[in-house]
Length: 278
Image (cartoon, rainbow, N blue to C red; front, side, top):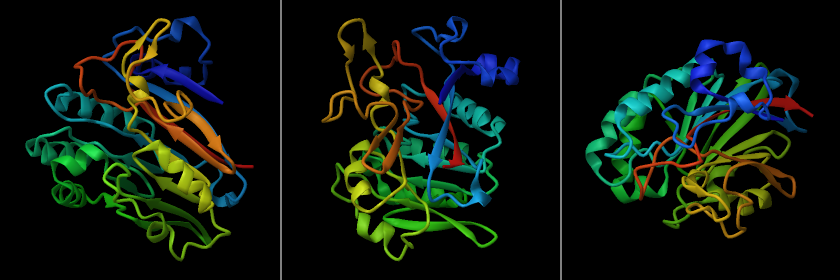
């Protein structure tokens, strides 16, 4: 079950995080300077009891640029830390076009704190700017950049695998390399900027995909709906939780903006996912 809370109310009374999304008073205005805090339980059959309740905070599409100032990203980092995550997942598009924003956004993300690690993949805009420099800047902040690779998160004898692939648009994703030698019996979480990666993830038996890219549509108009971010399946993988066969996916609306310097009817989002043992 997903729950959404505006950041201001989260800071004022943290216990309100348990309130239902359906509460009218929690509805976000069309223009929102702060991201929503969205909490969702993700039930995984293969999850070891040692990881039951593990909290993943998911940030994506920061798009540091003229449209998304550094203050917005620093604010998102601050709010993410208040959630006290066990793991932070970053799913790409840290900048939009210019390389001049790469190191500032990386230093801001370096303030993130997570008990079991911070993991990242690159998005299509990162490839357009400079993938090697984005990788170097994130690694300099001790962020694990998973470029068609995986890493183990351990709790005693239990293992949870964090895998990541490069961007699909740049034809750089290698799912086989990212999941090579990962035991089939262990739960696997895949970071993939583009939600269409869920198709290949399902083939490889991935339990959960975390993605962004769509901005949730960024601009939503009455009747028309989302102007941007539509996937090949219409609205199916534009935002929130979904599944394809045995693979679940969560698509975050992200933080930043592209093409237009505004969000309308589609506030930015920090997703807080709690893993539960099914």
